[in-house]
Image 1 (cartoon, rainbow over the protein chains, first blue to last red):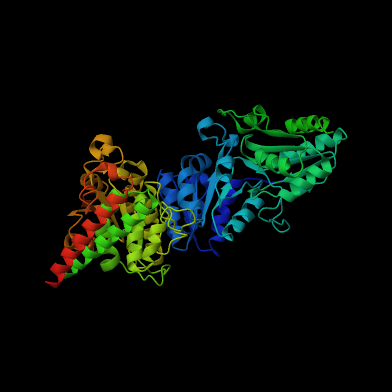
Image 2: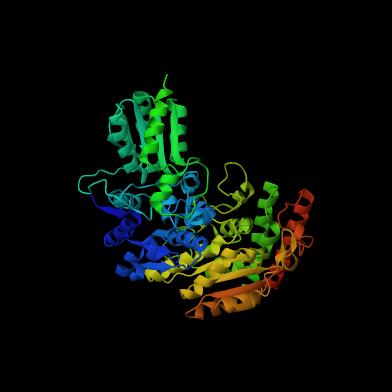
Length: 312
Length: 284
């Protein structure tokens, strides 16, 4: 199985879709890291560096979009969703402009750069803004298809990509990507694991561990954090009676919260949230940090077997 | 521009002021001071300069206007109504629940509003984006934006100030409404953005300073800006906050408070008197 960072796929997708879609790309001096330089090399006339000025980049993107152009605005998740939150809210989302935010280096797997660069709050920030669509792809294929879906959607989209190379899960020729629809990866009856981003392969691994213990786990991949697929979550809760969420994000405000909201309203069942536990990260190797903060198949499996015990 | 046209534009500016005050009075909230100070430049832009058509507010080739100091929406609505984008009577619905005339401009709701603004510092960046889009598409439209002098305290303004000359956005003209007052008082006491002209010069802009209430100076500066190639122009408007209403002039307390009925009537009668006087000049 091959591996590719979703940011890498972002750069490739921009370069590919640049042939067929009319859009421009902005970056704030991080094009080599966000991989928008792949697009820049191919379409130099459609790439604009704003320098290290994310607030200006987001509002400029909005201005370009008012003139009928789709714009990709790229930076690290921390500086896109974090630093420029208010520009995204007021300049982009309020007027519902066609700006697609390509936010790379999300999550703790940024690694050595440490807490200042490990954005664990972006899903919470972005999904709370009206008109915003939020997508957190799990692999390269899903990233490319999510970018295509974003291009075909009228309105702002937040696309969350990672720095770390992640396993290829899906085959582009056969994988069906639908915005707002969760993907059933493995059926199961005792518990449901709902995962997003790089926690999806961990969820699949956890399913195998649980199976070895005689527990049948359902695995659902949620690429679209907003609008979230309420139907697939409700059905899973009704049929399996317990849920574990897994995300590379603070347990407050991200996938876990989004799923909890649906469960509370549609079908309350016991649940557990795997994610960072309302703490900042630190410097270290990505794999070691993921382990340290419990973002592992082992922890998902443990939470799953625990939550099953709470079922009535 | 001849004197006759300048007087006509002055009359229109006073009508814009009346619309703005009616809006703020009806809402019992809003920002009259900075609305009155930009009425003259709005009159020149919308009635003399800009390539716009109220029947085609979304024409891709139109000139754009971004009110970066979005809290002066009453003046923008005032000029748009006067220019025929929507009925003048609607100004009285300003800030009321259900009205399309929001407290700060909403591009999706108001014909003629090219960008939603209100959070200071963001409008000039959006204007940069529009100017850049014009360059990319080879269109000849121009982009205008008005900043407040207090707004210059927002760091994002200087990100934009760096950006526009870097991309040689000579199709952009920014105005700074230099009335010297912000909510908390004198700009030089709150957090001085001075010297404004030298700052923009240092950021590689073409800089012009004019009397904000002299129609001929305004018009000439706009023409000069159009002739400058390779860099954007900023026109610093030395203005009087609350211009046109005696008790509002140069008084920071009118930044964001509405007149009561008596004050409103006095303000309207003062503006009516000025219009009458200008009409006498025009016809006499």
